[in-house]
Length: 85
Ligand SMILES: [Zn+2]
Image (cartoon, rainbow, N blue to C red; front, side, top):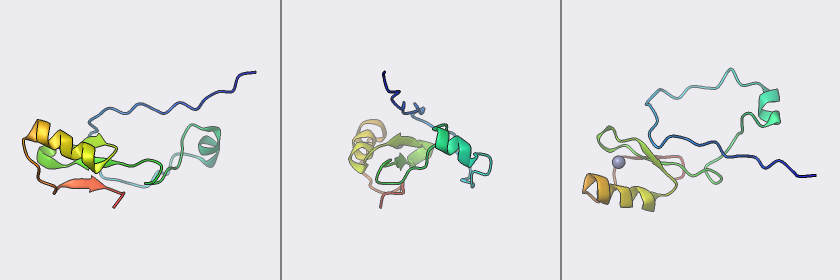
């Protein structure tokens, strides 16, 4: 018998900007069945480059800075949105 591995959903590297609101449609049953999952900053680090309406997602501050240097030609450490710090 093979166990079913939980697949991480693939997110696009750029997400549309919308206000964050509470999820009032996902039921407890859906969460428990694996359709949805609660996470936290330790498990799912998120760093967003908020420079020039960029909004690309990265797993670490270092990755944001590497992206900045390459794509924005700057090492400015401001305008990073994260729930990890
Ligand atoms: Zn950027």
